[in-house]
Length: 617
Image 1 (cartoon, helix red, strand yellow):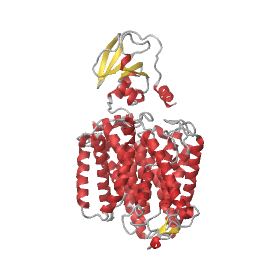
Image 2 (cartoon, one colour; image 1 turned 90 degrees about the vertical axis):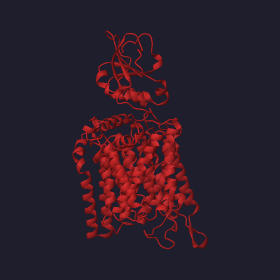
Image 3 (tube, helix red, strand yellow; image 1 turned 90 degrees about the horizontal axis):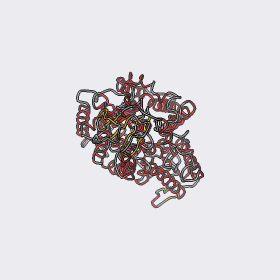
Image 4 (cartoon, helix red, strand yellow; image 1 turned 180 degrees about the vertical axis):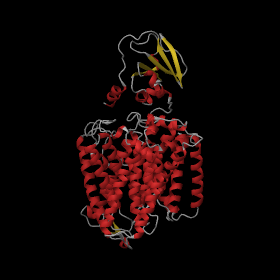
């Protein structure tokens, strides 16, 4: 627990300091809640640039520490609105931390997130372990983006945090930084609405579901897409006079490359093109100052990602991009697009409506309610000139359709997850209305961002007028907001609570045994606590994929070895588990035993692929 939360604190603190310092260099003098995303993007880029230097990650830790100290010192006493930002951000950060900690509280221990849903974390742990040791790995050779992995290496070398705890801390930190970033859209909204909306935009149902799988890359990429949209939004509002106003968006795009490689740019590029076209259509021209600002941002981006260009080209051969490659992945079929709207009352997003404890009618009623709010949100966004948010939503929808028609269910589901924060933002922004702004349109004292009609008119209700001429929201508008918040928040919490937490430790030695064991059938004897409490069976099976593997508790040891078994793996002290065995080798905490003589009878163990399919059903 201490290691996990130390990692959370380190990542969040570094991201906030680096991000706000970068914004200050761009001319931003007030605190901005885009700092978390900008800082996390810089953190991924810096760690990846330094992790392969001598010292096996120690250089990364030292460089980040020095930069954070310099950033904090440069910001001290120079950032306006710090106290106000702290009051707004503290409840959001605490709420997000509690939500992200729910899986560990429900399971009663810390460990590897998502081992019952998705065994991919074993590959990331192995790649990170080898990266920390200065060794190569399959992911490294394939051009896989390893920015987040290098952050975990820096945590390991700088703070002595284990790799498992580092990944858990990084994933929790991303879940905390996402709602803080969403505060950018709700900065001038009343406190309770601002807090609730930011939490739900940062952690909608599908993001919570991917978090529950331990899919840290998708959680971070969804954060970067949201931040990119909000950075474009700020460029025409509070930053419109800054020569470097597009550089924060360029830094976020750079972080997306180091987290998601070139696929991350597909979302950001589409958003940038649609938003630019919408801005040009509004003004019918582009000022020289605007062109210079875009050019400067493009230069920053290109310089930042140039070292990764060769690896991006290698990554295009990755199996995920092959329509006949991952196929369903860990899914049971196509995911409904309505899951992106936040109201989907299932702890497992992969289940079809009615397959769980909740009747299918409830799913469809929730989806219909959220769909109506989305349509109204789009209409209100057009009236209020929310071109950046609508560009993000249109881009995400188009890319989902493309993935659905030309990709696999696996890639289409990821497209939905990345779209979920934008859909939730589109729904909630007109429902929360700014303080001093009538839900029916117009501001008391003026609206610096433009007028527009608000949530009450959405519902067909006029706004009421309170004391001293203050406009107050109508009852239907408040009821609509509260109902959506409650339903969507309950669905997100259900996803968090259903997250499995696997083993608390990790050793790459088990994966290293695959070449030896692939030719025979292997019986793995594991502690009962690992199998019953930590979802270890799937984890072990994935580590030994490619052969026939049985996983049994240690209590079955003794007597004669079952027929068809050639190898037996035990952990701990090398005590002989069965007769007819000789010790073949020791690998980390494991002992590999080989059967003496010929192996008689067919193998009782399934292939790993068969095991995964059965376990998924």
